[in-house]
Image 1 (cartoon, each protein chain N blue to C red):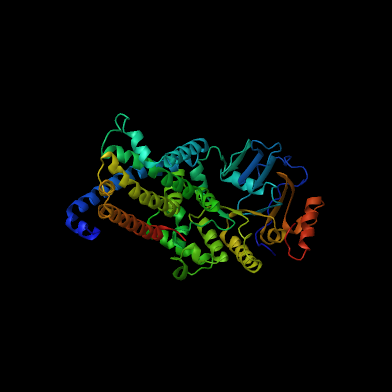
Image 2 (tube, one colour):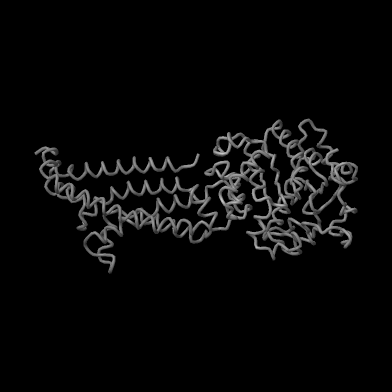
Length: 210
Length: 279
């Protein structure tokens, strides 16, 4: 059986796994953005918390993904078998690139611009929303792009704890010793990653200030 | 003549005794900005950046704060719009201590121009110039009108420049926009921190000449920081020389070079060097 014939005969199943995969990534990314971007804004003025937050986020990234899924299973409320646990793990992975880029983007602004903003009589909230965030947006988005590509890849492993997605085919293919089945999961996952990367790079270019 | 206004009242007749200002005469106009024995120090530094400094800036004068790097001139400027607050003493702006002013109100009331302009790179020229009016919630038509007027005042054709981004301007043009932005809501006070310092010599002297004419036309109270004696002589109605956070000399430009003080001598020596830049 060639990969192509397998994909054609199982197209409905692959399609639903792909949608499932996208859902996992979208949910995890949304949560990660909602946590990491405000946290990044918050740590700009707080060096002690910054070291802690960035350090903790780095630690999550160093844990091998399969191990992280395993660790989470016995934890009450967030653990167990299924998509919920997978999303928690994916969020933890996605935090660091977004958090770090938010911080770097917000602090990498020309000091003369910030001085002018303050001297013009902008309030701190106005400086954040009208100056810092718009100028940092390109860098923040670069972090979101990195995190999205990582999450699409890591989400294939989520199948190991019963979360579904394209990883289902990869694990099944490994068990069956069938390249065709592995590729039925790996090719759509790779394509998703490339598409997400290209799309987000496009938006990022449009938002970045020269 | 450098200026055609009546000569400014000389506040500090005894230049070498800072902090020992002549008693305030009730017969004269109120100063628009007044430093009352101001000390400003920061943690971790044994000597204060500003020591017991008293200074009065009268309405519509162009006061140039001259001094070397670290003499405290920028600190003095930032004390006026409450970017900094005095450790002791008070800075009084239009009859009210900066501590009594709402910081935001005070700053919108005072124009500020810095070196390299500090324009917002994500705003167009028009948006930069119209920023304070927009913060003050003027209606859009009035902002547009004001923006065009200001661009013309600083010598930029609104048709050509209003929709450009700062990155599409030369250094001199950026600085012109910086001046226009500071004038946005028609403040009565203008603070300028080495605004022409980063420009090439030709553009710099061009802008200095134009600004000198503009300053006379505008009738604003201007406090101008520089380390360039030439610039001070060209623009000032009064020069105040700072050294280590104290005033060491204060005089009209014509009289300044005759003051017998080592720091004045050091600065006038810089006039005769080839570049004209003080060491």
